[in-house]
Length: 237
Ligand SMILES: NC(=O)C1=CN([C@@H]2O[C@H](COP(=O)(O)OP(=O)(O)OC[C@H]3O[C@@H](n4cnc5c(N)ncnc54)[C@H](OP(=O)(O)O)[C@@H]3O)[C@@H](O)[C@H]2O)C=CC1
Ligand SMILES: Nc1nc2c(c(=O)[nH]1)N=C([C@H](O)[C@@H](O)CO)CN2
Image (cartoon, helix red, strand yellow):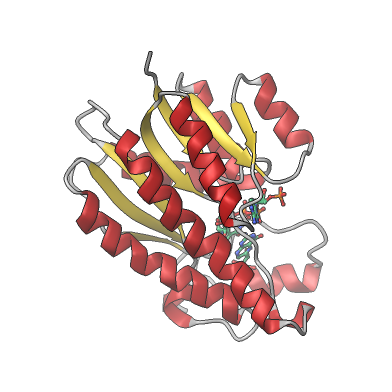
């Protein structure tokens, strides 16, 4: 038996959680990875979403996650690479480990999952199937506070181009490059004011904005190898 399936990495909270609940409410089978058990993961299970524990810091865990999905005999409509850590140089003095961690989650994980799971992306829908990478506004500008994070997201942006070529025409491969979407718990008022002032729109738009961008990509019959800048016009400020 096959069922149109959406695979989302790192969906236990925030944007990944919003995407998983959205697609489940539309009737898709949804499979997510989660690293740590948390209330969001319980809530996903209650919605009937398959949640597979996977900490992608080891290559073995990436391969195991792909194997578990392959064994479910699914037809993947979309593979959404959401899992990410936003680690800063200021929080460590082990820069080699930081760079490894950033490359592991933002480059090696999507690279290996795309190669392992693209054979299961054979949707009959006119828009085909989709791979969506979440990059970041900083891909265009760099970031002095998140150098390794920014470099790894830039590599992911580049992989969008290569996989778009490799997998066309059956699979479209695109990126979403967000700037501020939502604040983190503990962000203080001074930080929020500064962050908001960086874009023309001057808002933190929330998860639904990303859900809308994913829907836009999936509904396109023609767009591949592109990046959507979901950044409130930040580059123009
Ligand atoms: N929020 C924003 O304003 C912006 C977001 N983005 C991008 O959008 C995407 C979603 O953002 P957001 O919801 O804020 O992300 P979060 O940082 O809140 O969540 C990311 C998820 O990825 C999981 N994860 C992290 N590292 C690993 C790992 N090694 N193995 C497995 N899972 C892992 C985390 O698991 P756990 O629950 O265990 O921590 C977490 O649930 C990300 O790719 C992000 O970089 C880009 C720009 C702005
Ligand atoms: N994995 C994450 N990546 C990013 C986050 C986050 O919370 N988790 N947050 C940001 C910021 O919102 C930034 O764009 C503005 O402060 C960037 N990436």
